[in-house]
Length: 289
Image (cartoon, rainbow, N blue to C red):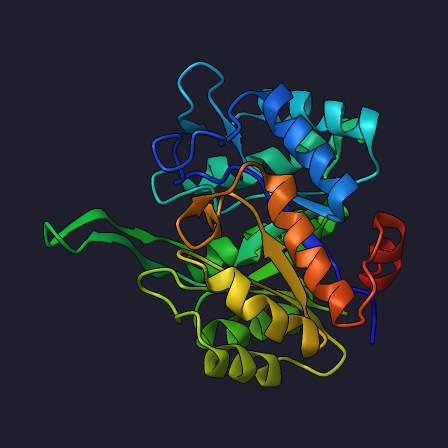
């Protein structure tokens, strides 16, 4: 079994400091969270950026460049830039960051997320019986193909984000159009309201549905799902994403102090289970970067 790849998702676009006051906002804070997570065992950082003043999610190349440069100065972390961003970001803006970064080798991303289908995207306040996020994450066929082609042209490996089982076939359609290069790397995103939920059965189903020779990772959004499903992914030969984008808790009722603390918990699980932790150098070989 290959060593475990731990991805850290340090800030995302939906978590706020109201949820957890330790969420990083500025390029310096985001970069520090990534570097500290690397020291704790992460080899990939899934990168979003925020408005440094307000903490609002943004998708500005200049903020990515500043953040990535700091990370590169202090670690050899693999940079995985989001193109998912959030439901409100225009389609053209979501992908534009990839060629913008590729034009500057010192901040070029090695990986980027590629959402493999559209999805009802929601957040529910059950007490008020209100959807506090009530949107659709749009990823039409032509957009997915354009994103995949752009990543291929820029030498960026797509992380194929799978929220629903049918999205695996969508990825295979892109591959059949020569937009994706094997081996494929999938990320199973479980727990989003509107997608497959964070259960062992769903994880096993997705694992068994991808092409042989592919690699895969899992993230579980909300509650303590990452801490309960993480050991399943580790035992099954998969990889794990953790961090404040997906989960704000380190244990029941206890807010996580940092992204690095969350990474260390997954790393300790793996070590207790007898599985080694991949370094960024290891990951570049495993994922053929």
